[in-house]
Image 1 (cartoon, helix red, strand yellow):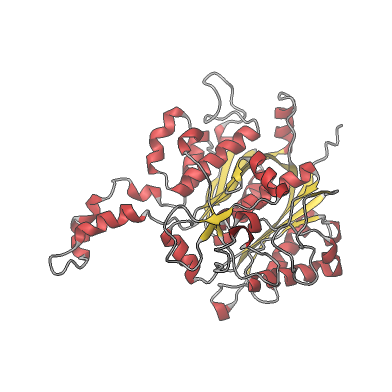
Image 2 (cartoon, one colour):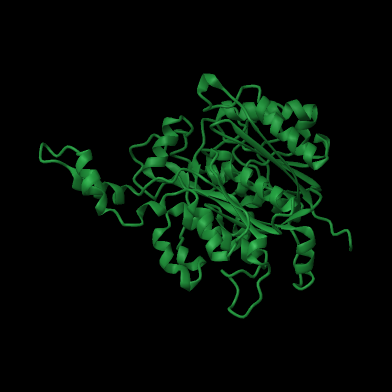
Length: 450
């Protein structure tokens, strides 16, 4: 596994914006996208805020020849397709989805991989209940399962199920961009995107592909998915009057998270093949080098894995593995993008894990949680974090930290404006409901030939 891997393209998509320019501008300004929900009537919920992707039409991000297929794209899929388009264009890749007919492709299809994290895609309620309503019996209008099996299902669009399969995010991206190499979908809750990035790293390192799409996208700003998150006691009910201040990671006043939608797709490339491309494309530089990945699983029987273990032992194992893989010590880390859900038990476990490895040095390392401005994008959260970390390394700038005026003791996560800083290594932490943990180490790219 000696191949170097660089991050050459970023395609974040969230309430902060579409593409790295809008996203980074929001990150350094500390501009929150959390607001009153507009996608559905949330007045019946105690939490009525989320960070939604704004004006968005997937047709703008697919070739004309593929627009008919958008009819079978749930919102999660559409957002992933758009994120991949932004990432490809940012990396200046020529694929079947972006190149002109006579333009040579940057890579042959079999040398391109795709690994995308996805969540449980909730069915459109109007679409589903419209069909269910046709299966009521004459006895007071009760739902009749037998009638549903015989006739009611016929009222659904014939390809209805294809809109809601989690693997369809990667499926559409691979078809549009003709990636014929290793492909996988990872559905491990909030850690899905981080694990998917790690999977692409390993595929390129072992030589099974030269370039990979990776990351994750999720959209839970809909009644069915939103209800699940509320029942899991993850959402705050204290931000309805001031949405932008509702998510407070690592703060003593944290009361829960707000949902975000989106995430991002990144382009990873083997350094030697990227060099060949860069020689033919003026001004092409990678954002960062991806040098470490670690993963672990923890159990917390008392909460049925809704929460991490209080000591953060499992989270620490993932971080330790990533640092070991990168060949660096905790003292060399200059920036941490933590998971920072703003759920007190989860934040404390994450802090305990970091303290285990960093000791007193932890208070000297800037922590820049993203969820305070973008909400929790769940299966896409790690990808959005990775995009911001990669941009921070390239720009040598710590993003703004907001909504942390009363931080947990021992961490440098107090509210602060964006500031220039020397950042050689950045650590990303992923954890979530279910017990999966993952960590990534990014390194500032230095062209040793210059």
